[in-house]
Amino acid sequence: MNTPLITALTFSAALLCTLSVRAAEQPTVSGDDMAYMKQQQRDLALFKSQLQGMNITLPDAQQGRVAQMQNEISASQAQDNSASRTTPKAVYFVSLSIPEEGLLPMLQDARHFGIPATLRGLLDNDFRKTASAIFELSKKDKQAGVQIDPTLYEQYGIKAVPALVVTCGNRFDVLYGSLPVKQALEEVKQRGDCATTAVQILKDAEGGR
Image (cartoon, rainbow, N blue to C red):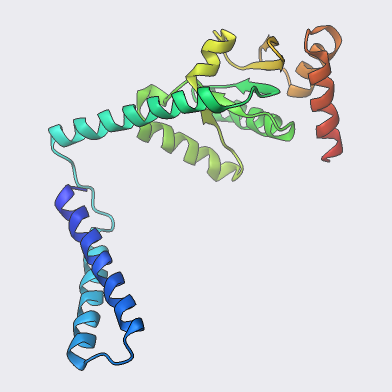
């Protein structure tokens, strides 16, 4: 959608909002003013209906600026998240390249144990492809969700997926492979440095049933 259309739509909506407030504050509104407001409402409704379903391609310069802004926002969010977040008890690392029939059970399994599923980045470095893939997953499972955080991959040195990380202070355990989450937690419980955390996650999941 190009800038003039966005500006026109925003301006029209703001104008209608202003007029509505003024009409509410003033006990008397002239017939001409009321007719004008109604006409503006009809024009805005028509304008919005004309925009629906339209696929307007931005000029290359504008498209490049949009992509640059998206990258800047993503980088800023990653820095903010890294600075302010607390260390999670566990993180489940996945990829949208995993076939859907395998990925959906993984997401459900991680969700059962309250463990966030995390991607390294965008699918093919394309925001629309990523959003489309997540939307397709949500059609099969409305609660399906993933977060994108490349800093966690670097922090725990994750080189392959799926992988489960269980943390405890400055230490952590990493298990690679498509083991059920419960089995992976049991492995940490038996032999990991962060056995106490694994026990707590298992206990919390059992209590939430």
